[in-house]
Length: 114
Length: 111
Image (cartoon, rainbow over all chains, first blue to last red; front, side, top):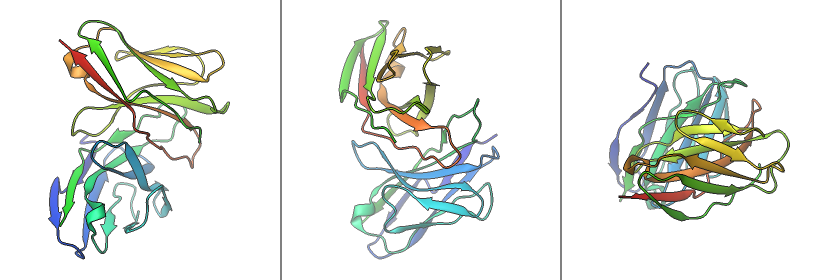
């Protein structure tokens, strides 16, 4: 299994540009999450999904959109990039199971908005 | 969700046990304690979790107090590769729960 993969690894955007951060998992996990991590800070939850077709807001959803059309993919969309969205973005997934409940993280996407 | 408090930073000598505390005084009866760590620039990594009994795996041990208001993660023989930020999280195991990370404890293992 490749686990959780994210693309791109790095990206520089200009203010007002749009982009989609890709996240794919091959573990058949039903839960998927997007976090952002600012320098020296903990992770903040942006959006999460409990299954295909179901998404919900986390702590900091403003400026982002998500969709979950398949179990494997959970893309994060930035419509009008702002400098405040400069951060490292992590995608994660886990299988809801009372015995096995570990969350797997991708390697992250480092985004800079100038 | 119950909140957690952790010291912002700790040092530990290489080869010694690292004991990382976490307070979760408002934890509910159906909330579990989870520990993750994040090595610089990488995604967080699951370490261990428990409900009320002490737990041990190949990475660490988790000691939860009898009243469940605090816990300690123990790395028995810390190595330089254990230098990381450690996050303590409490959450329910329900189908619509979400995981919230706090600032964590930055552990430095010193040679």
